[in-house]
Length: 199
Image 1 (cartoon, helix red, strand yellow):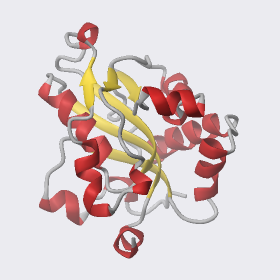
Image 2: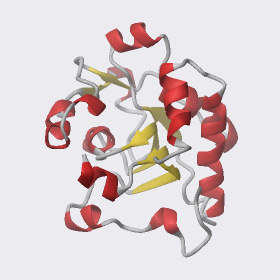
Image 3: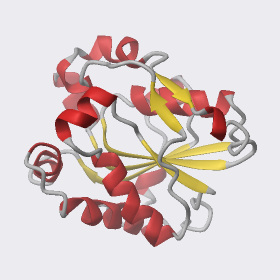
Image 4: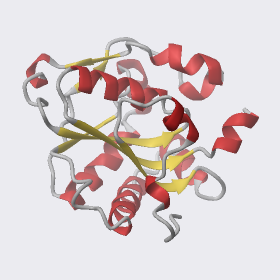
């Protein structure tokens, strides 16, 4: 769980210092390691939908603990979209389920159809670290009806797990290209750099 010192949720990692991402900030509730990683597995693969509100609440608490919750409040939030095939297979989008609770706690709108996947991609967890960026490159589009709603807006993107960050980067790049002023990621769990190196 987030520690109290000194502002651990808002430090720049080495990768971000070397390659400035399109998103401006990332809020993380927990590290993706035992036993908390099991919450993600239970939600996604055991259909424990009751865990999604808990994850949304923990993300919200991470923003409050930062002491910067007002500055982190976007105009609206979106969830990382699933492809149509995977959505049918799973029956729900775990990121959207988490986002519903976060939006309610932050008292901001959740836009469900602003961004969509324009093609099916492999699961990021099934492709190599080196292939993940290519896997999601140009895999997202903005709905025509939303193109004018994001101009100069601060948009939050909700996801369950951030590993390499390529999916969130791709969506943030699309939003910034389309006129968004600021993009903040709200993530339940983040893979530790050491874990990435071992994969």
